[in-house]
Length: 254
Image (cartoon, rainbow, N blue to C red; front, side, top):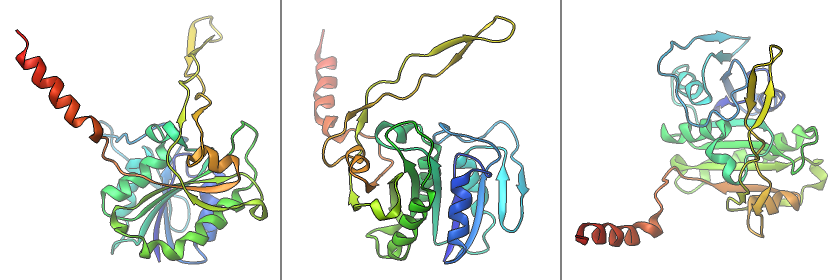
């Protein structure tokens, strides 16, 4: 199995290196990741500056760009098409509204845009304590890997996988979930630099708002591996008819 591996935490992150070591036991892996932490980069592309590919050992590369850039450059390293794209293991959850901002999810989504089955993998904790059980996330990926080719419509597969930060023996199983929702983010944090000039930090994400049964938040709380199938169609299909009626009324107004 040929796997393109990327992330948004950077080429030196714990998660991607733990996963790479494990994947090398089951297939050929090319790793292409950002040269620095690009968390929150979403689906952004670098279009105004040249990209540079730097090698860090056998089939391990960094790019001075975004996770999406990494997937594009990584695919160019293959003589034949890889079997899939994996992004992760992210240091922290990518649940609910997080997927709109996540570079981890974006790398997987770009893999799917380009025609490859893709996984986004995150180690999730509902508090902000240090993450410990990367080995659990690795085992979850290795468990799912043999079944990727049997996934219906595999070329359009984007699975957002969140793994609870608990020992493997405490994982209750795997479950299919929908995205939950968070409360709005906390306010911007104002501070000062050493010269007394104002600086600002984007506030932390909000706590879970929709975390009921069936959501990714609920699964992680119950120590299940959450698997959410994603697609990139942002159309609000249920609103098409009412939007058409609204537009018709706009045209009819004097």
